[in-house]
Image (cartoon, rainbow, N blue to C red):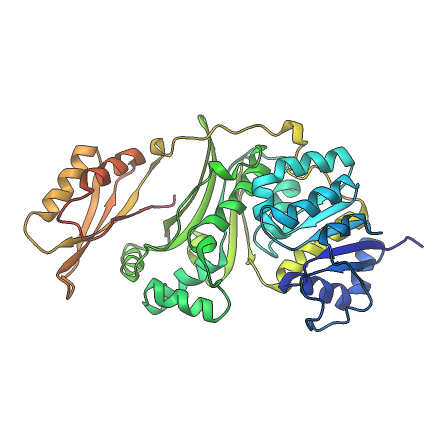
Length: 428
């Protein structure tokens, strides 16, 4: 009989506990699909005394997480998190020892993915990370294997469930950002310090991984321009709806003649686009290939069940002996992408200004747009608020983004403006 695949598991939080429960619940089915049993033999976590809802006594307990790499196991599953520290130490040690590594750690992969891929190939070991992007949605495998024959031109999507919950709740209730963020924190959808999510960092980690898979580039988190959703108002959501759009935080990676464009930014998404209908904490990724056309991957982007499902799917692949280069091609073939100047990118844009309710303000804004070479498609002015400010929304014709940036720079410090303008590209 084929020997079981033996697993050393680091981290028994939401996802780690989900992995144990999934392996218990579906043990027979998993063994049939994998061709052999998959068994956790050793675990490591911060608190041994915590009740996790299953029996820990059947596993060897290892206090030093890094020591899991030398345990009698075939694969190490890293679910600690963090770009560096214990997670990276364990990942390096596991691959150096020739053990397979399964991780959900997008930050570590975004910062150290090339190094880890090289180490895995040198050791002849598996490095799998389906759970690192979009939770239970099999987008990593979809790009790496399902779309492998295609030249991909663009990969983009809703990559952060926290932001999407906030934006879609603002959309359905009319409430403002701070109020909905507090609700998300109370429900456990957002961390006490939500900065990584709402400032676009988490989505940027994921985008850098998707870009590497799609375009054969070295993961380069530093090349991703990231902006979050803190400045989005309920009024922006309402204006977007009036224009036939919805606001979503979109990560976009696109190969151009001049290099690789990578950005996370709030967008206006047309109602006839599938991403406009992604609500709650759902994630969705669109991949565009020259022969397959447009592919849409959509599903739960977080949670113990979906993420554990992705982790165990990777373990089943390893049990079958099915794995290839972590980033879809050998590490030596991954090129260092040339970053594209986003100012040359052409798009339509939505601009929102809070301005003083007085004569000449619209003329000042229009003059700044004209002088910067921005063509205005429509301009909407709403009634004055109780504080005497007026919201002005502008939609531009398609043009270089550098022109929009130049117009906003011309208006910087203007006494007519109350607060910073908001700019959002319109997804096409």
